[in-house]
Image (cartoon, rainbow, N blue to C red; front, side, top):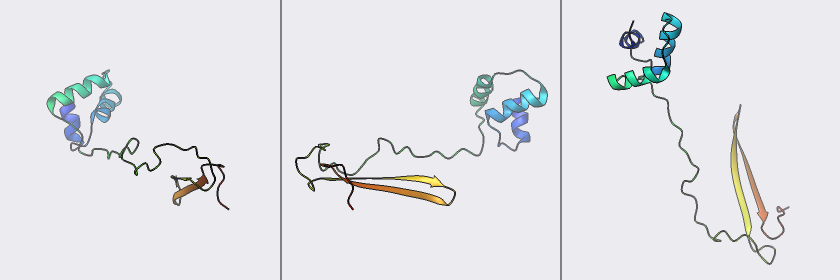
Amino acid sequence: MGIGQIREDSRGTYGWPRVRAELVLGYGEQVNHKRVARLMREAGLQDVSRRRRRKNLVGGPTAEDLVNRQFSVDAPDFLWLTDITDQPTRHGKLYCAVVMDAYSRHTPR
């Protein structure tokens, strides 16, 4: 049983992890995952259903920096800071927002 046959039997949906698992668990062949991946790549075989990639928002464009990263001020109520984050829950996203005075580090009442 070869890689091509296993992939064909799966209707072209198996990638190298499942093909390797079938070889090892189904047919008792001892084969390295790197070899299976290389052989499939060289043969132009890949799984049909590719995983969706999440966008990496870290380091992406942000709002314009209006204070040039200078957060120390000499008087209250001169500069206010804010941040918002989201946390996934069973019932959907939960948003947490914070607003505070840069001088006293207190939040408004």
